[in-house]
Image (cartoon, rainbow over all chains, first blue to last red; front, side, top):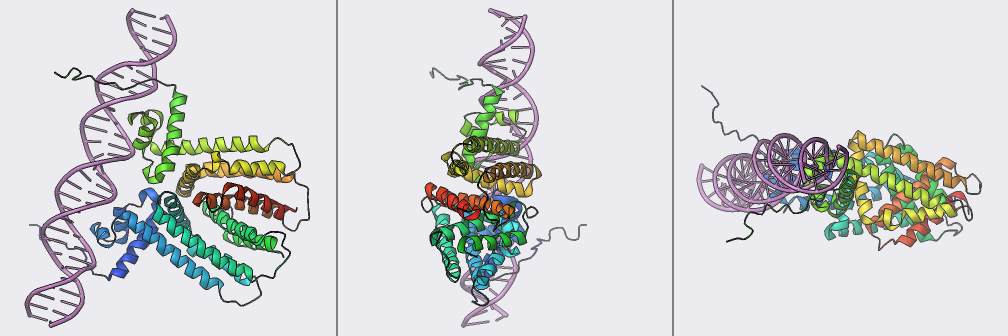
Length: 207
Length: 207
DNA sequence: TCACTTATTAGACGCTTGCCTTATAAGCGC
DNA sequence: GCGCTTATAAGGCAAGCGTCTAATAAGTGA
């Protein structure tokens, strides 16, 4: 006789606080986005990854898309907070804060393949969905503001280039190198990316 | 009585040459990628968009993924050919070819929202799949070579920046602005992108 | 200790997808 | 005009997804 014939097997049902579970699901979403891309980051797969039943998603989010949006918001918030923390202490020579900003941008936390991969999915969503576009807009605005504050600390040099242009260019350099690094951290390793950013800042704003 | 009770309704079966049909499917793939993102560009949807039955995909490609890869290759080829054609005639002042290159990169053909959206999907694939990575690698190499040839025409200036660094930076500027333009052609319109590229070239390689 | 809230699981349903197999007809060589 | 190749369509099948509903147990307050 099967000793455990019809053990209903309620495997594990440790209850967690809503805030923790939501965070779990958000984290699992990033993970899935990284491993499987937009196509593979399905609601059910995310739940599997988070170790919860697929029904739970609906309990916390209206639908998978909504979870994706919240993940985007969370990621933006975290990234901005961390970048700000890395760059803000106004110590050292002028320009040193900017350097720390570069280092943070290309740190494993924010330039890991998974993060950038997820980011691309968000970018795509931002093209077609207003809610994603709004998050993107807000993020860009805040990032740009932080950026301008850092640049303003630099010693003013000849205005060969309008300030706006120089900032837009440095910002583009960051994004471009981010992608380059994403495509092949072999071809353009982390330190080179940071060095290139430094060089760009020097070239655009004066030595 | 239904006059046309069991008309087998062979709706339309105009036969097309293989090369045309393949091109149709590739074009439909780009279109779907643009409209629906990676998630929505399913084999069946692509066939729907191309106006053919879903069985036909298998007849020309092994599977949807393979069609995606071929689309990537085709797009790379087309883009390189066109960029080369736009920039190669060595007429005008030095640097003018480079300018034409910038214009071509941000032309509707290659910076349309659909194209860039598709490109992001390819980038993601390149992270996890060797065949896509190979295409990406080859494309990058050829693009970089064309780029270097254009830059070499410029009058040599002070070497404040190693040539390699300057090229890498200008390349990054292009990619970064490409994305910026993708995210909002309102915020950074086409002409501004080109102007910024010109400014970057001037700043990096000397006036 | 007992009821009450709610986090959590599990199952059902309809739909779509990718893959494969079979049937049909379009156009070509003869 | 006839027949062969093959482009094309269409249907079946299993798997996976998203949504919804119902059942269950884990804490919590009295």
